[in-house]
Length: 501
Image (cartoon, rainbow, N blue to C red):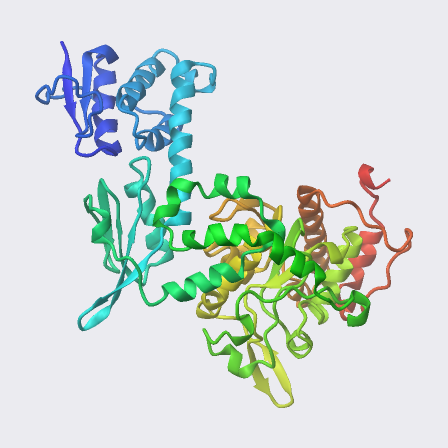
């Protein structure tokens, strides 16, 4: 007896799962099942749909379910048959999924990997354009041409990121629409249904050109990360050829331009990196009106480690340099004890202006709001993409939220190697200011040990050479770190690890 199974869409995982679970429970062999998803998948004969066997469904292992959810979105016309054949074999060989040499297992993992890569490209290369609506706030529309059936799987990412906006994503085979409250899916569209540009496009092109660094240009790597097939729908693609063409001349101009020496800036100062495209004139949030000046990141653009803090403090605001106040001096102490040369890392903050509350002659720190973090997000992303560090060390909840684009509980997540939405390694740790606010000896000792452990882990991931600038002598303790003196003394008495002996 043969079965013809009709699915509602090419990515109908729930429909396939329910049908496959009943067919497998009834012992229906793979060669007796024809799958039809409306995209030509296994629908060789166009048979009328068959009723499913009236048996309890077979439980599907969670590991297989997660794998199949991705693989089923592949454009391969044989995916449904492949997945059912693998599920059917699992009934007699429960450990089959661990055998990556098996042809069906290997093929399924390959399909899932291709879908995951296609989703990543979609999150990176979708470009929204503004569309005016009469008597309503504007909506945003994008056009994208994925290789696989990934829209339903990927659209929730854009909902989380742009929850307050009304937007549509159009693709040749399906469309997604978010009205601010619910997400719905519709039929495919054509390129002419999407706008060609909007009032922000010129600004975006200026910004893109300004963050292009000719000294770090690697054309083959760029094409690997940004395949040429996506260029036709990217507004910035028109700039790529002239930017590549002029890269050598621009780099030679940068080399020839005079720069201030580090010694001229005074001890403890890092070479300043020029802000990306108008940061000093940014008026995206009200903080610019209160602060003395913007405080951009500083450090070498080839740094293997980037440290992101919350925002500038009082000293940073006055001097225009990151991490020069009490928190910065405590960070310096931790870097020395972790044998990391500060001049080899890139230091920046999630928010570039000082947020404070006047209190008499003093300015008291206030935590930046979500709006402040979002306003500064383009500048932080520009720094990250310019430096391309091996590891980002996010100090504190505000920095973690800015880097990962989601709320993070530092106590629960510190010390874990995570990934941002573009796949970069991220490590969460305490902010030095939080350590300075601790009151009990036990809290100080524990938090300081964790902070040093996180710095050393980041150093090892980034493969930064050990730095011993004091010939083995204990560095002088900064006066602002007095509150942690017990912890520092305790750490100094600890035996060194084998790699330090």
